[in-house]
Length: 565
Image (cartoon, rainbow, N blue to C red):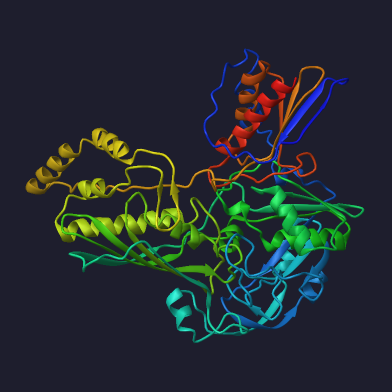
């Protein structure tokens, strides 16, 4: 752990670049000068500084011209009327900007060749919302007006908006590929059953596509100072975005600074790499002025990454008394028109496909398929809720077919002794699932509910149902994940905390300050985050990791500073 301190200036700092301890850190006391609400006053009084609040009279506005058809060749683009409109600075297509395609994968999934994404469509559009051109004007209203004057001539192609049609392969989304399957993998782990199962049940289940709706839509504001680019963006991982821009636009700027201002919700969607971020950055250089993009709600729902969109063909086998022996899942994941943001999500589904249960044999086949729909990205659990839904539905079906109590069937197969390694490779390191089930049953009073259900049925009253499900979440990220933290004590006694965790409304600033004040016994704590120029490194906020990883890093570094002092 690198440390730095200066005795003459009485400034002490120690940096923890990777905190691998995820346990809770007990606080000692809360200093009486700490007001736990004062850091939230700017939000409740309307003084938050979201991206749209950073736009001033010098800022130009861009508006994206988006495809109105799901699948077509672009025959021609006529932007002459838009360019002639007063207040329009320029209209740009792929031929006008030096842009590099996004690779087939920009996340943690496997490499995908042949399915790269142009930032601005060159010869083909692949979903309603695909970007064809971009207008830059002096006001957002004028940019919108001009975008409506850009005329696109299409040669429409067959649209494949479902995985079933895409799998048929009558039309390919990407002509250089042999099918619409982006990735395919098979996992088969654990000992196969010794004999034929007494019970075998199968279901086809759909996790429907959904559109994330955070309070603040997607947005970006880019400006150059010489060869230095500053991109304000409501992003969950500014340092990751900085690295991606640098890699995909190597000649764009000598230095790149990414700043996340106050952010009005994210839930995974704002951790993605959107082509608009790169286009806005290039435009700021071309027009030599700050350029902003603030998506409309319609635009956000149309072209922002969607979530879920998985089909599960699932089979569960076991004994007549309820001992599970084999789980088989044929998973087809719709990743939309471009797989770059969503190709890894089905891998998260696979990891927890066995849920809370001891299942000796697990088989999971995954196919990710491109379709003429909006791209998929991480959202609210990113693959894990899909696994839980499919598994718990098939467990209920097993109970129905075998004539078993669905509660006791679950209890019989719960993971007991820990740590436990599932056939998918997931490590269950802590928990007491049977105790959690018992607590739930105590709260619910299941027997009373069942009696009421029978009574209503006999009397012809309103029907009453009761469902039960188990869910396990890999909160905190990978077991070896960490977060950046730096704590500095100034000569005045004021403490400055720099953290790689970014806040999208969770209250990081208040919680981090409170934890540090408990360690040092002072309320003079300033928390700095979300700026690659003032925070040296950072992993970001996603996967329920900030309190466990980011806050733990800050507390550990605080204690190291105290020891050093």
